[in-house]
Amino acid sequence: QSQLHPQTVGAIVIGAGFGGIYSVHKFANELGLSVIGFDKADGPGGTWYWNRYPGALSDTESYLYRYSFDKDLLQDDKWKNTYLTQPEILEYLEGVVDRFDLRRHFRFGAKNQVTSAIYLDSAALWEVTTEGGDVYRAKYVVNAVGLLSAINFPQLPGLHTFQGEVFHTGAWPEGKDLTGKRVGVIGSGSTGTQLVTDLGSKVKHLTHFIRTPQYSVPVGKRPVSEQDLAEVKANWDGIWNQVKGSALAFGFEESTTPVMSVSEEERNRIYEEAWQKGGGFRFMFGTFGDIATDEEANETAAAFIRSKIAQIIKDPETARKLMPTGLYARRPLCDDGFYAVFNRPNVEVVAIKENPIRVITESGVVTEDDRLHELDVLAFATGFDAVDGNYRRMEVRGRDGLHINDHWQGQPTSYLGVATDNFPNWFMVLGPNGPFTNLPPSIETQVEWITELVRYSEDNGLKAIEPTEQTVSDWGDTCTELANMTVFTKVDSWIFGANIPGKKPSVLFYLGGLGNYRSILGDVAENGYRGFELTRAGEPATA
Ligand code: FAD
Ligand code: NA7
Image 1 (cartoon, protein in one colour):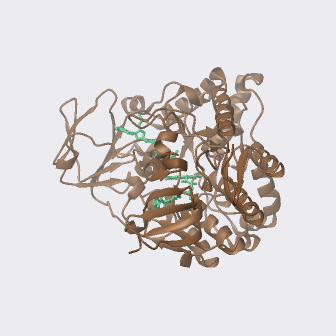
Image 2 (cartoon, rainbow, N blue to C red; image 1 turned 45 degrees about the horizontal axis):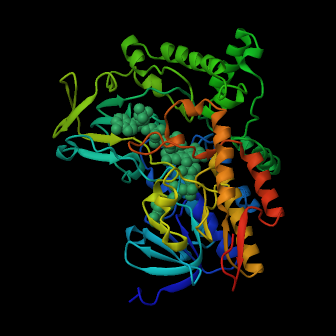
Image 3 (tube, protein in one colour; image 1 turned 90 degrees about the vertical axis):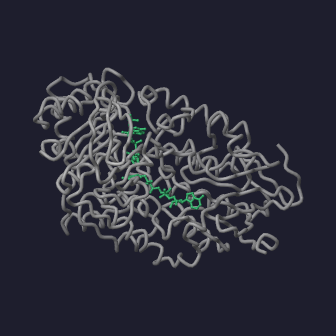
């Protein structure tokens, strides 16, 4: 029946993480539109609803992993340590939802997974269908579906025969106690290192299956005193100003000093200071200005980290297996004692590039050296189909029935990371070719900008807004040029969609920094939304 009489609302928001929560707040409480938010999770939180694995921690410092839009909220905020655990972030986001009375707009649970969003050209409305079969129509759709949300679950041979428990970090069950168990962890990115660090002291035996060792520096998690908290609260305006004008929005000034402009002694002093202070982005971008752009400079940072790893891990063979080689050019990792965990007698590493996993059996993992690693639990920390993954898992059709997967066949495209051509009134938060930063400030920037665009549309009686094909193509070129200036393109990782078998690697981010990005957004808006095609009610779409 609902098929025949779909309810029409002003806007539909997909996702209830940082992006979806703020979008619903802006659209409902500020624009006064009727809004429905959908999330397939049973509650709000997004990333922090799903990633309940032991050790899950932000690697943005606590004072910056939050919203900045409400001064009272900022004054009421509290945090105990320099970094936030998953339960703390989830509690924070649930608190925001309740504080702004947003829960009534959301529909949660598996049946509220959005399966399709189809643009009805003649009505200029989106028709959105859920897993449960409900159909709604809306003028605007905001996709806040997450850029690290669609999980990558490699189907290893024999996995279905395994009699123990199998988990993915990105869909970890609540309150799972692994004390006394024999646990295998596959994957050694940000997530795998956090999980292994936490489990090392809890489980009976831990086997870390690692394919590509990465460079990781200490996170620097420390308690925060009342005085530290008060200082931050007295300086919020200055803090957010600095953050929003900076490139990475991590709260430190990015260095512009070239590595080779200082002596070796001075360089090592600077690296050591950053190592002691902690933070992956600070180590890569706060120490020198060319680690991410110059291979020779990059090698000095890589060599420093390798020397630390060699010092920390006592057994040379274990150290060899964990030792990264080549460029330091993935999302910079930081950890709370990862390397030291391998000095424990119950923790071992299996280097699966030299000794691959052959098959999973009912009792564990068999490697090419014929060894059976007996396990009670096998945990996949194998990451995500990043950025466009969740878009491609829906049936999204724009003008003339154009499927998003056909539109994005070559590579996912956008203008400014927020919209793409042929998909009118269809917006993205952290869509392809958006900024690569500490994410809440970028999320806020985009949600606020989309809100103003929708306000403009409503005030001017517009029927549809979409970027032109040319602008989208030009923005793609800008992002590609910027990416090619860095060493990140030289290493396979999720930043370029190069972590998923069969996925075509491409540029997925604007690497020009948040400050520049905000200037561009401001400029586009001031110039009548330059690059967007605005269709008035009653007018046919024109180029
Ligand atoms: P998400 O929080 O991913 O929310 C997207 C939501 O959309 C999900 O709840 C999902 O269920 C829902 N959804 C998707 N598709 C559908 C559909 N078809 N129908 C219904 N619902 C759907 N970033 C940082 O800046 N700093 C950090 O320290 C940091 N740490 C991280 C640690 C981990 C373990 C992970 C996985 C990510 C981390 N990130 C970090 C990135 C993090 O994802 C972002 O900071 C932020 O939480 C993204 O918010 P979001 O609202 O855009 O998306
Ligand atoms: P990442 O950074 O993509 O790491 C995934 C890890 O899983 C990485 O070590 C991969 O090895 C490994 N992996 C992936 N597929 C396989 C298979 N088939 N076999 C063995 N090992 C595999 O994901 P994370 O969740 O750690 O982090 C993603 C982001 O989320 C992170 O940057 C934070 O922002 C939060 P590889 O390196 O590909 O050889």
